[in-house]
Amino acid sequence: MNRRYLILSPLVIIAVCHVAARIARQALGPWGWAPAVVLYWGLLGATIAMSGRTGALRRWTAPARGARGWTALALLVGLIPLPILAQNLHLLADPVILAAWLLFALINPWFEEFYWRGLLLDATARWPAWAGTAYSTALFVAFHPA
Image 1: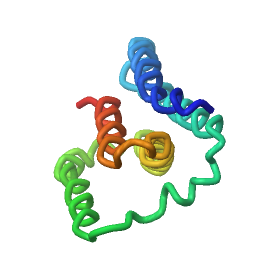
Image 2: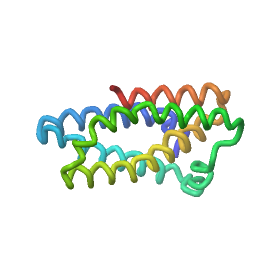
Image 3: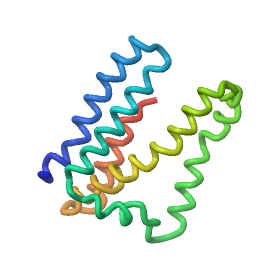
Image 4: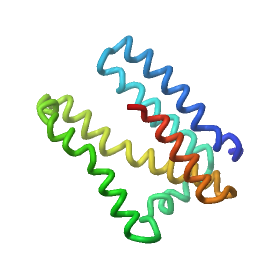
């Protein structure tokens, strides 16, 4: 797959998923996220598969190298939403919602690691490391608006 497409693929994925989420929300209300997230996973998976770089999956999910302080910082930042989860645990009382939430929590991180931290950083490997990281991070954040 063309490296230029890989670099631009986040813009296409963000646009397609945004439109799909709006349509699905109108049709399915609060469950509109479900088909939108399946489309998202499909687009990420198809882009990874078409890139021909699936052999790099193990490398993409390897533990980060470098100072342990960055790992600690990442874990601390990841704990920030924990109080929100604790306040809203009652929402997971419905078994269907709990199952959907668990399924999402088990699948989504893999697709996102493979794509955002793996494929996209490989595609920008010719850039300075900070630029590739900033590009991937900025688009990842843009895909996850509040």
